[in-house]
Length: 312
Image (tube, rainbow, N blue to C red; front, side):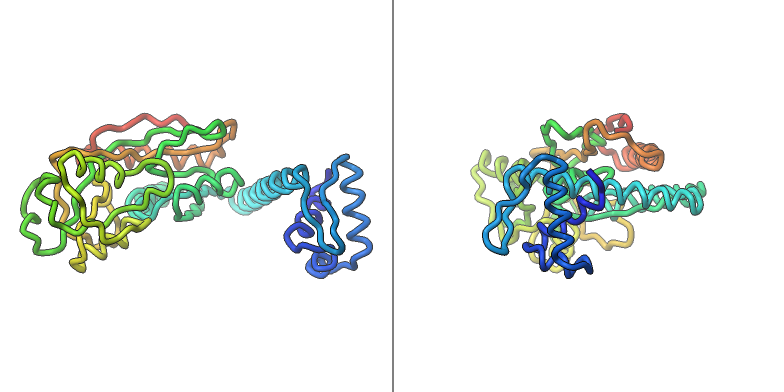
């Protein structure tokens, strides 16, 4: 099964008809139809169900399409890495994470690589956990950094570190001078929380602890990213519950942060990789420096625990 034939097949799927795909591919329709038929004969699978000019994927065709996209993405990544290596031995690392990690952890890792003349290009894609997992599975990312733990057969989840959840308060708030605050003291505040869009997160724990204490939180905002919420806190719209590592955010003016003492809630940052994947040298080097950064941050800011990370 050649890569070129696979590209033709994917083009037909994504354009819906052979004629539209032929225009995109800058070729005429008859040769493309012949190539498509040869592709089906070669692999011994009926890929399409034909209804007039329109083509619909069979179940087998859907599988070939999904795996074909993964294969093309992987082959393009190999070629890109090889070109960069040939140019000046430059490696690449593709990372998926929430914005807060991109402001706190990753800049320090890049700074250290630059200081040590480590020639690695870092590609970062910010997004939600489902977005990150999809891109991992399609080989568009080398690693993901997420708060959730995923029990999936095709994934490896490794704990990086566990840290306290803080309370972000509007400037001038009466509690902003306190070292810590109890959840009961926040019962009259407006809550800004993260969506529980994928498995279990900090917001679920906060809501559960409120219920234990007979508190009905006044939730005025649900969002997906921490930094925009902190901007809303600064504007006086309510309180938020960021992880303590947000203190390390580069170039971000933060609202007052105090510890949440009762209950003490923690959150864990996890490294997610694909099972059976062989890490590139650049990825191994990036993770080693990331481990250094986390160890120092743990010591400096009193993050609760750190887990020694084995390279994926």
